[in-house]
Image 1 (cartoon, rainbow, N blue to C red):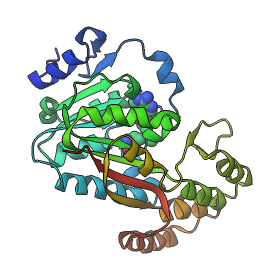
Image 2 (tube, rainbow, N blue to C red):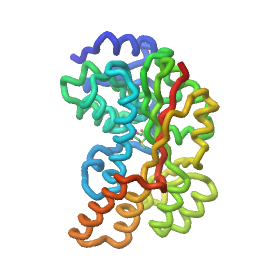
Image 3 (tube, rainbow, N blue to C red):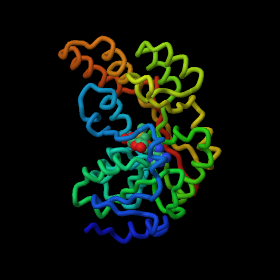
Length: 299
Ligand SMILES: C[S@@+](CC[C@H](N)C(=O)[O-])C[C@H]1O[C@@H](n2cnc3c(N)ncnc32)[C@H](O)[C@@H]1O
């Protein structure tokens, strides 16, 4: 029998207790999400595994993402609540549970993703964790309930109606609370299409400001990308103050996903190139695959 702590009950009740089904794995599912789940381009992902495999795009980018989360933590109190929106397989939620004493809500529209996160929880994290299968667009958490929100790689999906969504998210933050979001950039998507020698994808990205989620599948879904500055403008329009921005270097994706894909080098060279790349990225690079923003609800 799975039990939940008081703080978790409070959040669930505020979000409409009767609409949730508790799964034996210990997460809650909002009823009636099936059709929306189908429309999601990021189903059944496992970024944690890829983040720990050396010399891959994901592992090359991981230090940038985790660096931004560490920076966020410097700006937060030691205890409080962080909501991880579009939490995927939970790699960032797990980092928070492991390295802080914060409570964490992992929320994702895809049940397979939340189920994978739940399976990776250490038992001692359970009382600090709430897993929700929920659509960001239906969020009914109580106003001003959290100290911070992570939205890494997900808000771009709502690009046409971004400002109202950001306004809703801002209302869930306590005054002074922080939003950390990461968005794919147009420039990075164009460079990547060049590295993959895909004229079609380059032209499509340039024309529509979208990118494919999988270069190896012609029927893969596409997702919107952002011009520099577009997201900043949306944050401002929604009443959030920009605190910091951090680029995610485009180099790992160009080298591992682009060049290595086209011309796989010998293993020894792979390692040498990987080491050189890690050093370059740790020194910072200007071309951005994605841009990470920290913004604040005014006090
Ligand atoms: C690019 S992945 C990022 C995963 C995670 N934030 C990370 O960085 O590891 C985007 C995630 O957003 C989720 N997602 C997409 N649409 C959503 C929605 N409407 N509500 C909640 N989550 C959604 C997907 O299922 C996926 O897990």
